[in-house]
Image 1 (cartoon, rainbow, N blue to C red):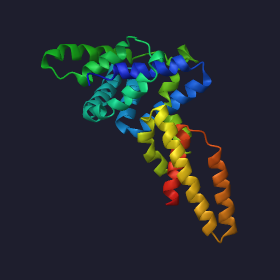
Image 2 (spheres, rainbow, N blue to C red; image 1 turned 90 degrees about the horizontal axis):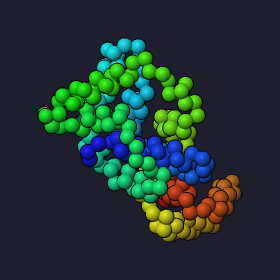
Image 3 (cartoon, rainbow, N blue to C red; image 1 turned 120 degrees about the vertical axis):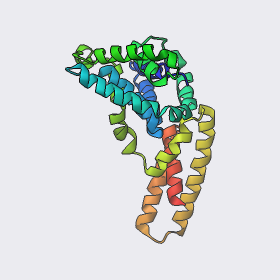
Length: 247
C-alpha cells in the first residue's frame, strides 16, 4: 500500500458528490461509517488525516508536536491498514462514478511522512513536515469559510457513527457487519431471503412451543416486523443478529 491519500480523497469525494441525492448520500455515509467501525486502524487514518488538514494552532511548536505524534502513530499502523485495502477497494470501485481525481497536497505530504521508507527521501520528508506544520498555524476554520461544504460531514463521521450504528445494532449484529459490507447486491438478496426464511421458521417454532402469552405476543410482533423487511444490508444484519440471539 503506497499511501492513504487517494483512498481518503476518494471517500471524501463520494460523500461530496452524492450529497444532493439524499437517499444515495445516506447509503454511502452508512457504508463508510460501517467500514470505520469495522477497522479501528482505518478509523484512525481517516480521523488523523482530517485532523492534520484542519487543526489550527497559534504557534509552530504546538503544530509540530501534534504532527509528530500523529504521524508516528500512523507509521506503526501501516501493516494493519493493508489488511483493509480490499474493503476500501470494494467500497470505492462500486462508487467510481462519484470519485474525482483530485490533488490534495495535505494528504500527499502526510503520505510522504508516513509511508516513506527510503533514506534518500529524508530531505523530502523534512520539507513535508515543515509544510504541514506551517499549514496548521493561524489557519481559518473550515467551518467558517465553508459552513455548508459537504466535506465537513466526513470530519464528523466518527461522532455520527454511534447515532447511526452503535445505538441501533447489538454487539452480535456489529460483528456481522464485516462480511455484509463486502456483499454484492445479488449475493445480499439471496442471503437475505435465506436468513429471513430461517428466522421466520425459528420464530414460528418458538410460538408453537411457548406457554407464555406475553412472550408469544412479542414473537408474533417480531415475525410481522421481519416480514416487512426488504433485502438491505441493515435488514440482513438485524435478522442475522436476531437469529443468533434466538439460537
